[in-house]
Image (tube, rainbow, N blue to C red; front, side, top):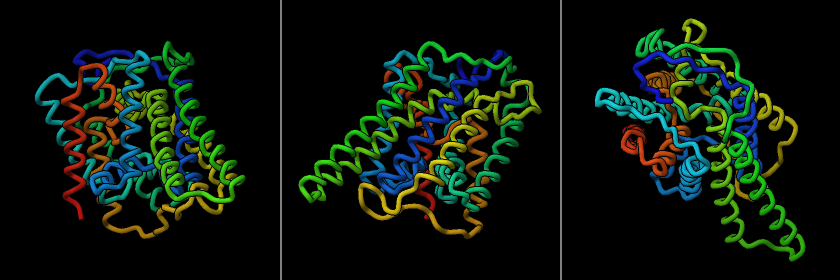
Length: 337
C-alpha cells in the first residue's frame, strides 16, 4: 500500500499488531535506559551522529539494518512517492522535522514515549503541541477524503508480523544474554575493562535500535498512510486506530517498567543521560510546532524514516525519497544552534 495512491482505499486498523508493536517499543526503550542510562530518542541519535557520537551512530545503524532485515523477512511493500511535487513534500517535511526536533530536543520517541513514561512536564507540553499541530496540518494538507476510509478492527497478526515480533525478542534477548555473561565473568574475575564495557554499551545502542525497528514495523508506524489516518482523528472517515493501540501499550508498559524496575546506576556504567530540565521555553514550544507541521505533511518522523530507508535499500524502491527526507532532516538540525 502506498502513501500516495490517488484512489481512495479502505484500511483496517491493526489492533493486535499495534499492541505487540507497542510492547516491543517499551522493552527497547527500557533496555537502553537500564543498561546505558540513555533515552531512546531517535532524532537525538541523528543529530548527535553528525557530531561524531559513536553510540548514536550505532543506534542509527541499528535502525537502518533493522529496515533491511524487515525487507529480508519479506515486507518489501515500501510506501514510495511518485511525483516531483510529492518529493518536494518530503524535502519540506524533513527540513521542518530536523529544525523542530533540534529546537524541542525530541520527537515522538523521546518525548511521547520516553518522556511521558517518566511523567515529564516538558514532554507532556511538547507532545500536546506537536500532536495538535500534526492533526491540523494533516487536515489542511491532505483533506478528509484523500486518505481513504477505515474498516473494522483487524485482530490478526498477519503473514510476517510474527517474525517481526520474534526479531524484537531475539535482538533484546541477545543483548541481555551478552550483559549477563559479562556480569558473571566480571564477577568471577573481579574486574571489568573499560574497553569491554564500552563495546557492550555500543552493542546495547545497536541492538535496542534494531529491536525498536522491528517494533515500529510490527506496529505499522513505518506506514505513513496509517500515521496520517490516525492524525486525521474521528473527524475523517479515514481515522485508523492502529497507532492508538501502539501508543497505549507502549506508554503503559514503559511507565510500569520505569516506575517499578528502575536501577540506581546504569548497569553498563557511565552517567545518566536523561533530561532533567522542567523549563517550558520558546524553543520547546516553537520546536514542537515546527515538528508537528513537518510530521503532518508526510506522516514521517525520524525512526520510521530510518527504517523505511533501510527497507528501500533492500527493496530497490524509495531510496531517493527517504534519503532526501533524512538528508534535509539532518540539514535542518544543523541550522539550529
